[in-house]
Structures are given as structure tokens and as C-alpha cells.
Image 1: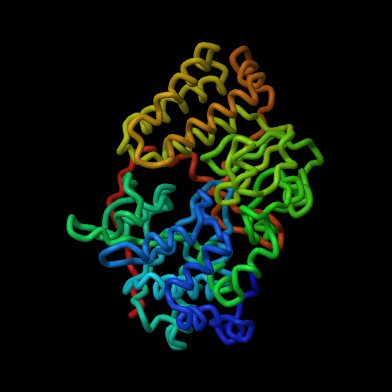
Image 2: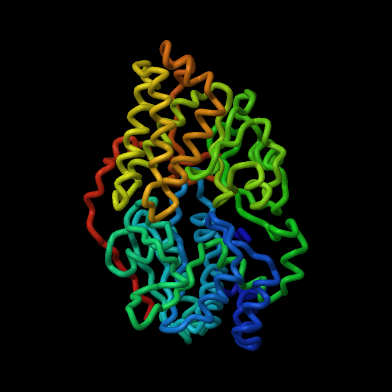
Length: 445
């Protein structure tokens, strides 16, 4: 799926465009049937069956829309940005197939205002593909939004496109979509970059081809980001079903200092993965059975020298900063949890603080509109339970593992060096949301 940058001619010569051509001949129902039989699951986090989502929108009443979610923001994840840089044509062809299949007259790409290289690549590819007739049937628009985690939450993304902030709502887009009214629900299809990049090949080559690799319930390949204490940070494409150990030890070269791996965090919304779980297959259902989540395929790796109380402090701070405050239990609860963890890390906490943290995790999800507080609960509980000895050590003295750690909010990737560039200023980001709805648009007429 990852290819060297090139011109549209090279993409077409390699079979690009065949998916859209075939989709136009097959018709909407047959296209959706192909996607359903392929078993493609969303690559943005939840692993929801893509064909089911497309069918829901196709069957809905009212104006229909398509959105490409390019607002990647999960910690330790960079695969969507790399795809937009390396193969924007497949993403855009996937959008075209989606729009024509569900009958959308308008499609949007929502990406962060900080994604400058990705914007440039998309705009250049759009200009080429527009001239080749890829977008004759619909209007395509780029919408830039703030560098906020919840801009990548699908209903928060809708809010930005509608001219508001990235504030989640409870009803899913395929039930109540863009610009919905009491008389028109406007079902909206939202897929992330990697999901849409798979569509052209599935339509062109068929569902059986897609199922040649992967597992029965999670077919195909997936892009995995590995960051942190490994020899080679990067994005790696592997068949689903490959073991996590093969990804970390093989593709990423194992621990950078030869130390044992202590923990792996699959983003900020799932339980921690311990060293004894490295043989779990990279499969949505296998990860769920193991008590965690595959998510968007991003992994922050920590070796034996890392303080897991500091890791907990960094991730709870991220979740507090990125909480939008629509649900006070989430905003206030995540803030209280981070304060308590910070006190423990600094050596001024007590065993009673651990009990208060656990109590807070039970209340942080009250009235939630999105999955962020659920992630807070799952992550914090798993870290305290898995590393109880480290938390206990901090309540009776100074941190025994004082090594500085970088929070894995990725800004860029040096592929030659095999390293990521992290947002060093994120530690100073205010948890108070002050920016207003400031989406900007680049219109493709």
C-alpha cells in the first residue's frame, strides 16, 4: 500500500483507476457487497465492518455525504499521514468510489491545520486526478481543523465541517449526519485514510484477493506505527494475524538498548500490553480477547528503564488536556486523576491516593458523549494493576527510574534515521479549550 511518491501516470500504470472504473460498472449494491465480503474492517480504531457502514448510509434517506477522516491524532500513530504523503492517489480514489457508491454529491477530507506536507500532497494529487475525471460526479473539499485529539473523533469531525468546534455528540453519523435537520437525517459515511486506501484494490481485484492474507475475522494487511524504546521507529505494513512480537522485535528491531520490554501502550484508549502478551496476534478480535484493543495500530513501547508512573502521568495529562469539557465528569475527573498521579510521581502521594484514583475511574464515564473517558478508565486501571509495585514505590520515596521520557505525540518522521519527531511543547498545552471554531477550506471546484 505504501509506494514511492510519483505522478498520476505511475499510479495509473500500476492499476490505479481500475477500482473506480469497475465500481461504475458494478453499481452501488454490488460494490457494497464486494466490500462486505472482503471483510475489510475500519482502520481508524474501532475495527467496525466497513461494508456494514456503507450499507447503512446507502439505505438512509436524505442528502448523503462522505468524509475522509484524516485528522490522525492518536499517540504513537503516524500511518495515515505517511499514506497521504506516499500514496494520496489511492486515498482519493477510495473517496471517489465511496461518493459515487452512496450517491454523495459532496465529499470532505478533514485534516489538521498542522498537516502541511499532507495538505500539499493531497492538493497536488487532487489537481491531477480532477483533470483525469475522478471527481466529475461530486464536489470535493478539504477542511482544516485544530490540532485536537477529538477532531479525529468522527462526530467531532462533523462539528468542525459544520463550522463549530470538535465537540462530539452521541448519535453516529450514519444515523444523523452533516447538516442534519428534523426532516432530513443526511446519513454520512466516515472512513479514515487507511480504510479508504484499501477500497480501490478490493473493488478492482475482488474480496477473495483481499482475503489472501490476514485472518478470517480480520483479513488484509494493516499499517502499524511503532514508537519509543525500539531500534527503528517507523510505520510497517504487515498481514493481520502477525504476532505483536514479530512487529516489535522483527520490523522495529527490538529494544533500542537491549533491555527487556516492559510495556506497550496501543494509543490512549486501551489497556496496557505487558511483555507476556507479545505473542498475541495483531487481530481486532484477538486483542479484544486479550483485554485490550488494536485501535489504529499505533504502539508506544517502553523498556525496563521506563517509569510507568511517569508514563501514566503523561497519558492521563493528554486525556485531560484533550477532553472538551462537554461532560464535566470527564474533564474534572481526568484532571483529578492526573493531579493524583502527578503527586504520586513527585513523591508526595499516598496509598490513599491510589484508592481515590480507582474511585475516580468509576465516575469519569458519567454522561459521556464519546469514548475518551472510557479510554481513561481502561488505561489507568490497567496501568495501576499491572505496575502496582512501581506505584507503591513512589508513595514511599523518590522515583527509582528517573529517566526522562518523551510523550509520543508524533509531529514528523525521519525515515532514513528511523526516528520520530515528537511535540516537545505539548507538556505546556493548556487543558482549557480557548480556540473557537476556525475551520478553513481549500475547495476543489
